[in-house]
Amino acid sequence: MNAWAMPQVDETRCTLCGLCVEACPCHAVTLGERGPIFSCPEECPMLGACPAGASGCSLCEEVCPTGAITCAFEIVGGSPPAQGHGVRALG
View 1 (cartoon, rainbow, N blue to C red):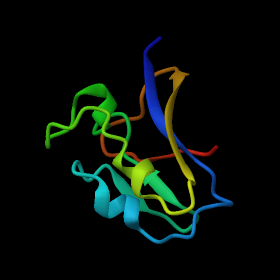
View 2 (view 1 turned 135 degrees about the vertical axis):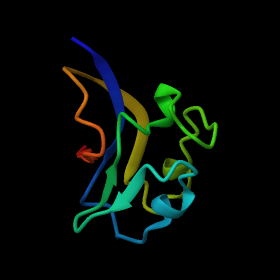
View 3 (view 1 turned 60 degrees about the vertical axis):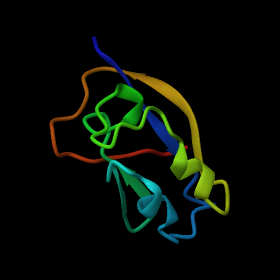
């Protein structure tokens, strides 16, 4: 079993402002209908795969005006999703 991590999102607090998308130097965040979608783990900075060289920068958490994103990364067991498949992180 592989272990991987992703930020947690409280959809009830997300206003869909898109600041998290703009802040991510790795382009690992897109905005869905209910909140941010993280392209983890293949582009997740916490795993050292960030092309911009970030290492767990937590910029998405820092810029979120409502505190909807928590980068106290939760380890999730199992295999990571296939390359190019985004994952919705729910709090």
